[in-house]
Length: 83
Image: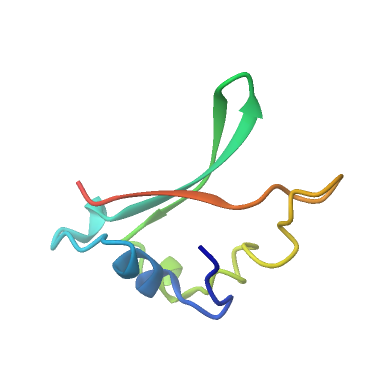
């Protein structure tokens, strides 16, 4: 999915179904494959973090520089959960 870089974290979580009334349970994890079926957990976004909810995806570095080509940064893969 391609998402505009001016999308704030609060809208990102809501848009992907993180709608638990207990804000702390609404989470998004950045994950990156390290090969051989293993994954690395990067940034974790928690719905109760009021400052993080105001940031855009560009503010956290999830922008067009994440191409995965050659020596570029890996593509952003996200895992969402609400419980």
